[in-house]
Structure formats: structure tokens, C-alpha cells
Amino acid sequence: TDPHNNEAAWSPEKAKRWTPIDMYVGGDHAVAHLLYVRFWNHVFFDMGLVPSKEPVKKLVYHGLIGAEDGTKMSKSKGNVIDPLEIIDQGYGADALRTFELFLGPINENSQWSSRGIAGVYRFLNRAWTLTQEYIEAEKSDDENTELTAVMHRTTKKVTTDIHRLSFNTAIATLMEYVNELYKLKTNGFSAEWKQPIETLVQLVAVFAPHMAAELWQQLGNGDQLDIADWPVWDEAQTLAEKITIVVQVNGKLRAKLEVHKSIHEDDAKSLALTDENVQKYVDGEPKKVIYIPGKLVNIVC
Image: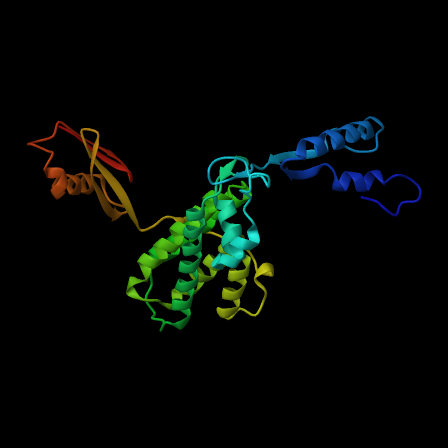
């Protein structure tokens, strides 16, 4: 904190500025390191040299990646995964990095999976291909409110998950986002697609930085991706125009209705009762029809 101070070990003002550390992320050796640093920090606190007794505000102990058979990776067992071999197989560094973060919660142990990395590789390829298709396509002037909604929902979820260090769920959300974009592109691309595609690239960059940087340049951006402003979401835009309502008959799922988010209760009940699959399980007038706005129609016979 103060290496050039010839008058004292360090300036208390600078110690107050830099300590305690916001976050410590460690693995195998974290316990030994923290015993050591906590001992000295307690001593310095008692001497009045540091502002807080504990040296770290938040501790995160990351899990270990085990071998594919569930055992611990060990050189003596010959089951260690060499990252360079994975990269040289054609998956590349981005797929390896993304897959490691997708394996599970950061603070839990997980197992290597040769099939799992292939799935992550396919996801990144789909993101790359979608961006290329957008770049090459003729753009229409059509508007799509669902496209805007899914972009804002994804930005919110991925950003929140990253702040929570929940990288695996952030990547899963990006996979869902790519799936949604493929469904929405069936009617072609419009000029409105520019922001959703750029948002995809920016969010993916946290996990696959090399691919994302290349796509960012291909999209015509002159600045570097790593200094671009992080995407922001509008809470009001996170709600889709259409929602899915589940229909149950005597507690069992019988149908799903895609309706406008402002649908009236009577209309939702009517649609549920006239659904072809629901009618197979409803004999005569139901005893009760319960509606939970925007979520469920439960028919009791």
C-alpha cells in the first residue's frame, strides 16, 4: 500500500484506502494463506496500523475439477487433463474457458466431461454463425417487441449472475438467449437486430473473449470490446408482450397457452376450457376454475 514510505511502515490513510480487501478467491492453499495473513493483520490492528481486524471482506473458495470417472486428477494416476491438448483438438481456448465455468457452481467440486465441452463448443459456434448471418443479411424495417424483451431479460439475468459469481447459470442463460434468437430470426433480420446481436457478443465476451473480440470488430465497431460500456437493461422492457399460461386439470398439466400479457381472467379461462387437449379430461361443467394471473388456470372437475 505504501512501498516508498521512509518514515513509517505505511501511511494509515493509505492502509484505510486499500484495506480490507474486497474479495479473496482461493483454492487448495487458501486456508494456509489466510491463517498467515489473518495472524499478521490481527497484530497490525492491535498496534493501530490497519483500520480493520479482518483482512478480507468476502471469501470465495472455488471447487476442484475432478477426473471424468469421479476421482481426483493426479499425475500419478495419469488422469490429468492438459489444457493445451484440449485446445489443440480444435476446441480452442474460448470453449475450454467457457466449459470450465459452466461445469457447476464456482464453490463446488465438479467433474470433467468430454461430451460437455463438445456441447459448449457447439453453443459458441451457434453464436458465431448467428452473428455471421446477421452481418451478411439484408435488413428489413420490421419491428419485434419480443426481440427487445428477450435482450433486456438476458442482460439483466447474466449481469446479476456474474455479480453473484454464478457463472454456470449466466452461461446457461446465454445458451437460452441464442436459442431464442434463432427462433425469432425465422422471419429474417431487421435493423432492430443490431443491439441484440451486439449485446450477445458483449455478454459472451466474459467467457469467450477471443471470439467475442473478433465478432465485435466484424460488426463494425472501431473501439475495443474490453473498453466498451457494459450493456444495460430497462426493467420495463424485460416483460414480453406474450406470456405462457399453464393449464391444469385436477392438478395435472394438460396444456400451455401462449397469450398476451394483458389477457383478462375470463378470456384466459375460456381459452383453457376450449383447448382441445383440455377437453379430453373435462367431462361436463367443472366444479371450479381457478385463475392465477399470468401463470395458471386450474380446472377442478
